[in-house]
Image 1 (cartoon, one colour):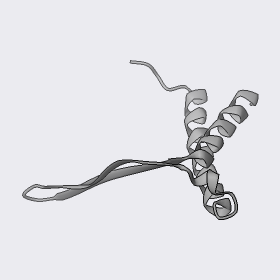
Image 2: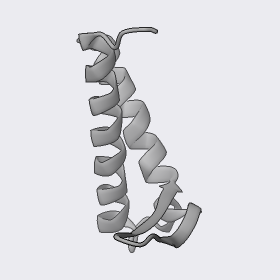
Image 3: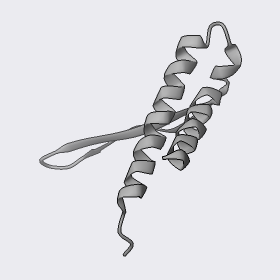
Length: 82
């Protein structure tokens, strides 16, 4: 089984932060630059599994837009420069 190195962990963290930062910028500047919010919402809604002792609800959505992709590539660029 492959081990996750320090560099791989840093890359994953940078990509997540870059995507969140890009989405935040898309929300802020979306009114003035509407092309930043063009995208899709992917995922599945809440699904509940009820067992005798516990109830578990799972769901996940990914909102991918132009700003998120730009933030993703910016984080990748920063990673390659470090």
